[in-house]
Length: 316
Image (cartoon, rainbow, N blue to C red):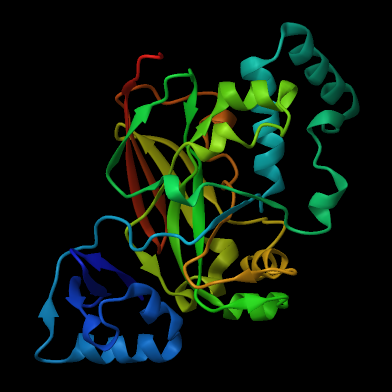
């Protein structure tokens, strides 16, 4: 079921009639309360959708809720390796680029420095991102003052609906309340510099400055059974740049929750972003959006997310 917020009112989508219907009376128009009730809430919402006296609403807009925290994962090895190659091709010296190309041509193996470290295959690693910098659908993002290369990343947001701690992957999957589209906006020149010279690596200012989340949340019964068969796409100014898929993830959503809950508590409203679908960022495509561009992300059966890139601010 697709749900969201329409000017403070909780709404659900009637697939048959293609209408958004207000369903919030049972949950006080509290989206997280609805998600926390799980399957009974979905059942009750379907009853409201079928009622003769239902109240028609509008399509959701704005943030569906304010994330309590944001953990950013990297569930697809293919994206991580492809992104590493993109970094070398965009920012590396001619000598560095040539070394990678020659090594991989001769050995038919990934260049050692671009391979995933051992722990990547032991548990689903993540970093803490900035939940307070998450922007809504249709937002304009000012081009940062101190960055030249801004990138999009097509990701899926996993919404926690139940308090969990030290849970198993199965318990983690059961605690998922919904899914949404996310754009992990990234400053690639900053990331390159900090990866090579920064104290804490490249996943700091390049990632925490801004991100975006879709207005629609889709409940898990529609997504989990086909987790590895979802498709996505990215369009820039209306032009299709790439189509992608969720196939081939190293870890599943339940695994991510289980690891995140290891010796710490996850709460309703916490969000876990999956990492980028393979190929679905400018870094892997070797092309990047520019100031003034419109970026449209879409995940099959979940929804869309539009971000406008503003003009570059003047550095002070």
